[in-house]
Amino acid sequence: PGGFGVRGIEGKINAARYAREHKIPYLGLCLGMQVATIEFARNVCGIKDANSTEFQKNTPEAVISLLEEQRGVRNKGASMRLGTWPTQIVKGTLAEKIYGDTEVTERHRHRYEFNMKYRDRMNEKGFVISGTSPDGALAELIELRDHPYFVGCQYHPEFQSKPNKPHPLFKGFIQACLARQAGRATHARGDQESPRRVPDRELVPQR
Image 1: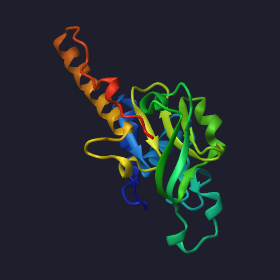
Image 2: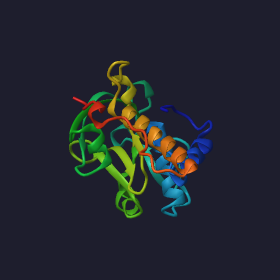
Image 3: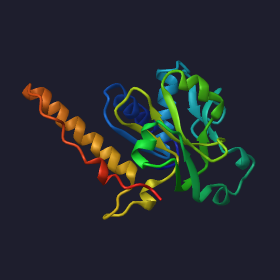
Image 4: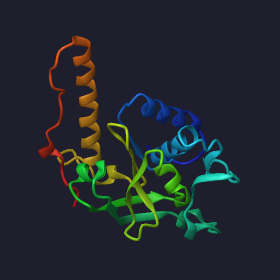
């Protein structure tokens, strides 16, 4: 979920690790994306001191840091990246399959972002930035290459999700959960029934 502050952060990082290592579907929103990034940097990339400057101001490995244009701002009420912003989806990614598009708009409410200095190093290990701001400067969406559904977004898809039209990321997450559940049941029975899934046609493209 989204949120602020250091309380419970290490537990959230451990939860992200468990989901990654056990191939459990994971959808991290805002802070959820950030803790997943820290976890991957520490335990897959070997960046042991990886952290966010929100939790450790002087961390030597700031994989998550304050937005560049907001450094020096003291009035935190005006320091957030707020409102609707465009996101460019990378072709050939899980994100493109989920959205059915390469250009979407999403609503934001955050101060911290992924530090793009770590992009190449983490990409080599399977950490994919699958959505960015149009200029490519900000990471908006991440996924893991060798995982059925491990997705994190810096924005808040819940702001655009409705009971009769759920956001594509939530639909994709539920589909992945159902597939995992059915797959485990099939394994226990020892038969070859196809996993239950939500039809692709029900994934609602984001406009």
